[in-house]
Each structure stands twice: as C-alpha cells, then as structure tokens.
Image (cartoon, rainbow over all chains, first blue to last red):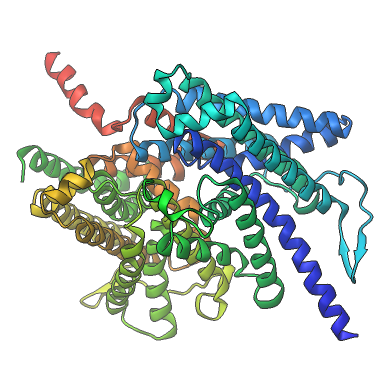
Length: 300
Length: 318
C-alpha cells in the first residue's frame, strides 16, 4: 500500500513539476526571442506573465466574456503592452550601454508591478480552469485537466515560434538583426521593426503562459520577478537563444523544484532553481545544451 | 583631493551639523532626525554601489544580501552569544567579505546581463536562507531585543547619538572613497568602465580590481547592516528582500551613478520620498518609484547630480 502511494506521490510531483516547468519554459522562450534579436535580457519578462494572468481574470471573471474570446483579448492586450514598452523605452535609447538597458527594463518591470497593484491590489486572483475542475486519475495521482492545457499551449507556442524563426521571411530577418544589425540594415531589413516585433511576440508568449497557469497557481501583482529569474535560469541552462533547449531546461527545472519541495524541503524549493542557475553561469555559461563553439563569440 | 570635492565636503559637514539643531527645534520635522539616520545607513551601502557601478561599471542586484549578512551576524552574535556589538560588527565584516569574495570571483567573470542575473539570484538565495533557517534567524517573523551600541561606556540611546555616529562613519567612508577614486585603483577602475579589453591590454589586472571593489562595497553594506541592527533593535527577512537591492540601485542611478555625490543625493531623496513624502500614495509607492526611475534613465541618464553644475551656472549668470 505504501509503495503505491509513494509512486502516486512521485507521479504527482512529476506532473506538478512539468506544469510549473512549462511556464518557466515559456518565460525562457520569451527571453530568447528578445535576446535573439537585440541581445538584451528583458527583466520585465515575468511581468508579461503576471499581466497575462490578471488581465485574463479581468476578462473572464469581471467582464464575463466566453473563454476563447477572453484568451484572445488577453494575449492581444499584453502583446500591445510589449509593443508599447519597446516603442517608449527601448527604441528611444539607441546606443545605450548594457547597464542602462538593464536598468530601463528593471524600471519598466517595477512600473508594471506598480500598475498591477494599483488596479488589482495585493490579493491573488483565480478564474475557473478551461475544461472543468474534475481531475483525472493516473496511477494514484490526481492530475488537473488544466495541466494538459499548459502542456498543450507550451508545445503549440514552441512549434509556432520555431516555424516562425526558421521558415518565415520575418523570422529569418529577425535572426539576422541579432547577428549583425548593421549588415541587416544594409540588406534592407528594418531593424527597428524587427525589435518591435520581438518585444510583441515575447509579450504574447508571456501572456499565454500567464493565462494558462492562473487557474492552477493563482496570480498576484508581485509574481513576475521570481518567474523571470527562474525563466532566465531555464534560458541559460538550455543555452541562451535555443528554443528547444529552453523547453527541456524549463521542464527539468520545474521537476527538480517540485521533487525538492515534495521530498526535501518546501522552503528551499525556490533556492534550488537559483543555485542551479548560479552553478551553470559559473561553470558553463553556454548552457547544458548550448553549443560551446557558438557561445565563444557571445559575451557572457 | 580636488577643490570641488573639498568644497562639497565642507558644505555637507556644515549641513550635517546644522540639521539636528533645526530639526530638534521645529516640531513639524522633529522626526526627520530618525529618517536621516536611515539615509546615512543607506548612504554607506550606496557609496560602495556607486564605486562598483559608476566607476568599475559592474552591476549588483544583490546588495541587500550583504546588508542583511552584516545585520544578521551582528544581531545573532549579540543576542545569542552575548558578544560585544563592536566585535560582532567586525565579525560581520569578515563573514560578508568572505561571502562576497567567494561569490564575486566567479560572478565578476560574467558581463552585463549575466552579472545582473547572477547577483540577483544570489540575493534571493540569501533572502530565502534568512527565511528558512528558523533556529538561527528566527525565520519570517525575525527576532528582537538586540542591544544598542555603546562607546567607551556611554550607551547610545538617543536618535541624536546614532545620528552623530552614523554620519561620522558616512563622512569617513566618503573621504576614503574619494581617495580611492583619485588613486591608482580609481584610475584602473575607470579604465575598466570604459573598455575592459583596453584596460587589460594596458596591464591593468581587471579581474583583481573588480573583485576588490566588489568586496569593498560588500563591506560597506555589512557595516551599514550592523548599524541598522543596533539602531532598529529588530530584524526580519523582509528588510533585506530583493526589492531593497533594486531600490539601492535605483537610489544610485537616480542620483547619478558616475559620481559618488550622486549616490548620496539619490539616497537622500528616495529615502525621504519612501519614508515620508510618499505616504500620500500609501501602497502605490512602487508605481511612483518605477515612474521616477524610468524618467531619470530615459531623460536624465547622468542622474540628478548632473543638474547641479548646470544650475550653478545659471545662478552665476544671474
């Protein structure tokens, strides 16, 4: 009997880990999109997730819109926020130093956090899961149907982003900007527009992550910073710039974290991902799945 | 020392002497003395951050951790081991310097965004440690009854005595820091800020200087933490969270990070805003902080201190 419950427990932790990990993965992909085009790390990345969750709550609970419409509106709204952020804070600061760019995105993240607190207050919010709250049972573990939605959305986002960057003209143009903005400009790519698109896309994927995770983990105004930090951990672990690396690393981080919370100490669960982040940065900044050769030309 | 610095130092000292006289006689601003003590404590940390950011060009988003390490070491040694506060302060400096060295050596090999994230991660880890090691730190609720400081048998029990001690230390640290800036090390740091590659090529041992300044700034923060502990008499992890690290950086940037006087100006302004003038906004101070920081970075990248020479020029022209 105890053996079954232990497996059940482990499977439970595994699913929790994969769910949280998928969110880290999406945050990491968001980091990668902006990084791939601008080589900027956007410290406000976690705030997009927070805004996605809270705006979704507004459309479903407060405005009582049907779920698919609310979802589309939420993603559209946060995408707009991302675009505005780029237009008003990143775009005017051409040729700014890295230090300035870091501080600007931090300032924006504080501003978003402040606005969210102004609008929603300090309480956490929730809205009902996409397809009912009846859990599925699986080897003695109760799995929420929302978990499947999280996995599904993560897969969809990653596939879409990969197709976009590998196959479409715009996607390839964006990659060219990261490589060499001057050369990209010379061959007629509008670098300005590409940077704008990268912020919008990155905000969109953050919004999706926020919208799917809120029915499971709730959402409040100050959730962004830690999400960003762990998402960055996933991005670095997977090799900055690599989408599949980000997904694998994100889910890996999520599983480790949830196993640690369940089996070792729940208090230190947040520290695990961060210690891992520091170790990777110190020992192998190209990431576990990154290409060491390619990373030699990057600046860590 | 340059004459402009000497003048500014003289002005600051005069202001510091006159301030308590005025504050203690005007009841409306009587409690400003208390706020000025916090300004002094944060000034100590931010002079170090200014050296690190403005002069060496390295960012740290984890300085609340060093502040906390100093504070907790002092608090724990004084209450649980009945150590003398001054000895505990020295122990705090030792522990913090060691931690800063261990974290600094690998972290400072990283650049820009990576360094920012690494220090941020470090800060959060230390904060979690303060929360979780309940037997040592008292956990989230913290612990109190930390004894005050005393000098040569006189116990410091008034705001005025702490004001004098804290600002005396701030002035000493300021003079020391100004000397560092105008020394061989300061020149090396500035060369680092402009181009690390060029500095390396000129034979400046960049990594050694970076770690040195990082450890020095951590030591400033640790001393500030010890002073904070004895003045407040109570410790809890929430005083050393990640948002404090951000606020410290904010103070330095708003004042002007390329100038140590800017760090003092920014600290003074934002501490008064946060502790006194922003009460109008209640809980929404985050919004105001974000707006101020964004406005300064966007429109006044050299910080408020940059306005001073401009204003004095206008003044002279009449």
